[in-house]
Picture 1 (tube, rainbow, N blue to C red):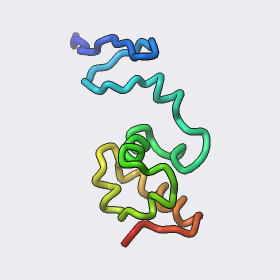
Picture 2 (cartoon, rainbow, N blue to C red):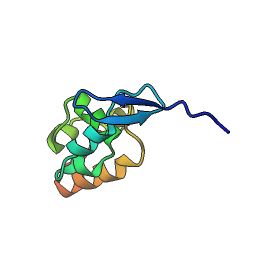
Picture 3 (cartoon, helix red, strand yellow):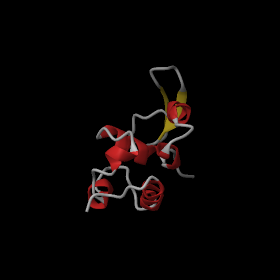
Length: 97
């Protein structure tokens, strides 16, 4: 049998969770802070954090970046781009060229 290298951790808010990587993010806290609306709710947690880490919280701010710049962000994957393009288009915006 393979031995699991998961460890039980406790976050600052007291949630206990298992993790096999050195990622410090508590999955319970992440689920609780997922936005209910806006374009951020369409994204995975890593993609949402990638945008938040550079200060993007609105579509207007997102539109000041190119697709290439957004794809370079750690946590942003190609699956997020069609969602972002769609919400920008619906708002009459687009990525910077």
